[in-house]
Length: 187
Image 1 (spheres, one colour):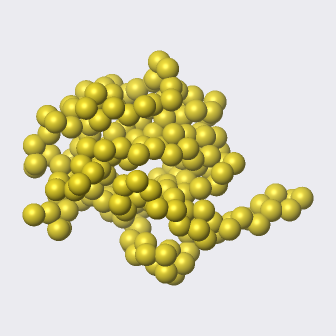
Image 2: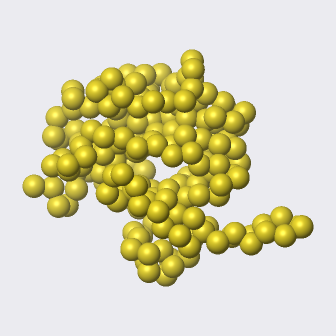
Image 3: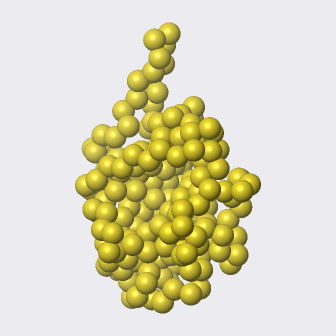
């Protein structure tokens, strides 16, 4: 397993060993002791599977009182995955980073607590599987508009398909401290 650090502390790309032959391939998508050895000691409690069509943009989502770390992987198709640092007092607060995840590159992305997360679908369809460190709570949802000009995400889609709920999220600058994820180490 190869761990690649990124421009924002805590965001990690994981390249697992893939065993391929004429029959296809095999890979371990999660083995707790291997991830712990790599410094990812997060306990995951929920798995989610998302299916979306081309040009769909989902996000930017987070939970406020029960922030979630996520381990993300595309099962079929290709997406552009985005994480926005919304950890208060972080030197990269409001900065974003994005990665192409696909069934071809078989990469995983680890996003720690304190980030807003979203993605767009580049292939005709995509199945996107992710582990979460806390349970989803509908009354604890937070979000940022996908097109926040101050964040300036360079989404690689034209005419995105966006849910009505995601269209109504505010800009990051409009959120109060109480509307951002509550991290135990928040000062």
